[in-house]
Image 1 (spheres, rainbow over the protein chains, first blue to last red):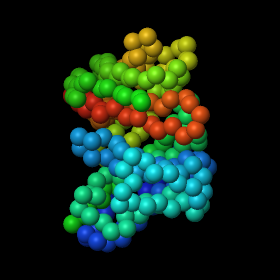
Image 2: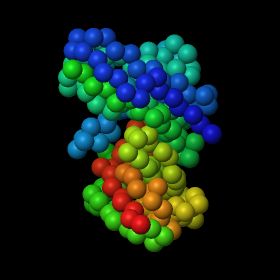
Image 3: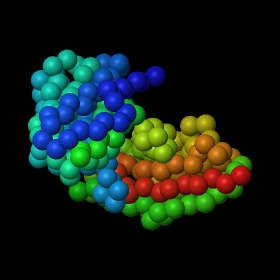
Image 4: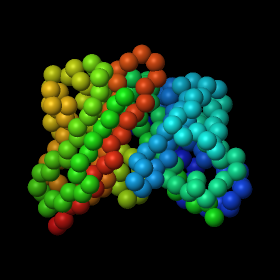
Length: 116
Length: 116
């Protein structure tokens, strides 16, 4: 079974802090993704990576950066956390990125981040 | 651009009954993949079932089946013999089978409540 893990289920940070969210997958997947999920707005793609050290902006990259130094690990960084970044953050991985069955994205358990 | 529409914000079903969750999609791509995910209150997004646009048969995975009607652009999820643990949000999603990186596009979700 594919397993995607995230470093924290719940996180509380203060405005202005630098925040690191870690994601690890154990299936040797090429692609990894970070989403945020907010009521009424659905899932929105923040960043994705299709290879080590490669990254691409998603729909809402402002205020975030990412790092992928190893294939299995994809980190989301909030350089200076703000209250409007309070959200549920979901990491996912997939083998490929088209519409075939091998492109299925598998998600981690999510991190509920609260910025005070 | 792709769009997923889930018109049922909430559905109720009694335990052991079957329920259908609606999903329609809009795309100009000739081939694509369709996915259903379940999100319990814990937050994890769980992959349920995949249907390729060129698959001749409707997909099935245990109690889940996908009623795929390509001409109508619908991909409804059927859950047979509902269980209390099926209470969750359900999301329909799609990816086109094009070259290059393709984004997973989600619907807004349907909340299913299974009663005893």
